[in-house]
Length: 144
Image (cartoon, one colour):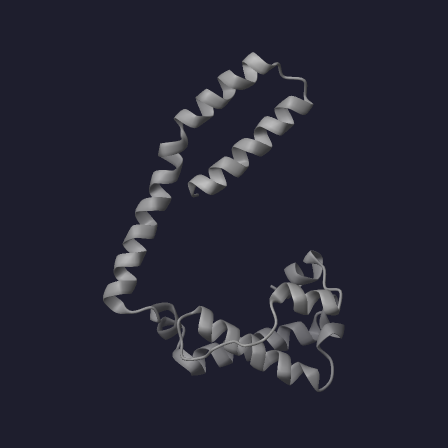
């Protein structure tokens, strides 16, 4: 995890301790102790991120895209995803009719772009798209 994530976890921990009635002096001690472990926890993330940046600079940003089979691989993955989604009663109603092909194209473009391939996604944000049709985190988790 990064320093940002560590700070969020620390903040949540401190809020819970406060709600539990832990005193101020004890909370300060706990915060000091937890912060002592920060470097041990975040260093691995920093090292991996630096190694990843070097590898991307050396080998290109499309490594994962190529490892997944390029355009054909991503398209096959999306086709398989929508085969599964089509039979999942928890989410299949969101993907009925003609709009399914447009959604599949958008998802494919988004994945290709995200994986470093030669596509540019120009659609709405995921949050905006899901808000329009009232997809919840539950539905998203089922989809994934």
